[in-house]
Length: 168
Image (cartoon, rainbow, N blue to C red; front, side):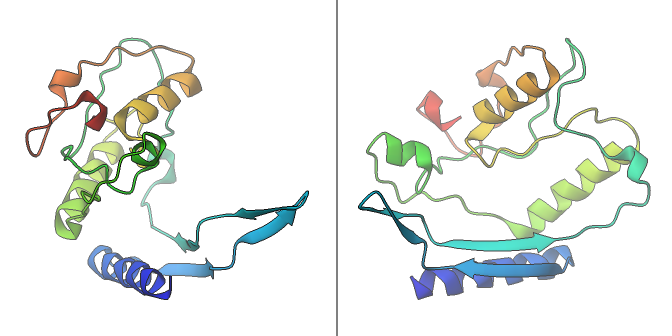
């Protein structure tokens, strides 16, 4: 448990250095158990952090909701065979060692390009894929905007061959 916390903190440090962005607060929660109606309920260990970024013009910020039917969807980055450690794998009873790996320098370059496109007014909505992949991100954007979405999964950029649709 302590080793996982140390590795998580080291990864946060490494990303903060690459992105040149400070964390303004943080907290770890290692003892997340409580009793309820005679049962012990355990919550995974958690590292909470807050980071801050600077925008030259806050009016260029975008929200995650789709704005209108027909807007195009772009996937930034590539999808890999990396579902190890995911809630999806756990829920399906799978065990996988292919945990997501971040290339900090590539991530910084992609975020810089996305930021530039946003400042130029080329981005109407934006959402990450951290809570369940592309499918969950698209669903959340559609629900928030009150519009549907049609996505061709064959168009999703892959960093390596993926033989299962659920990896996307």
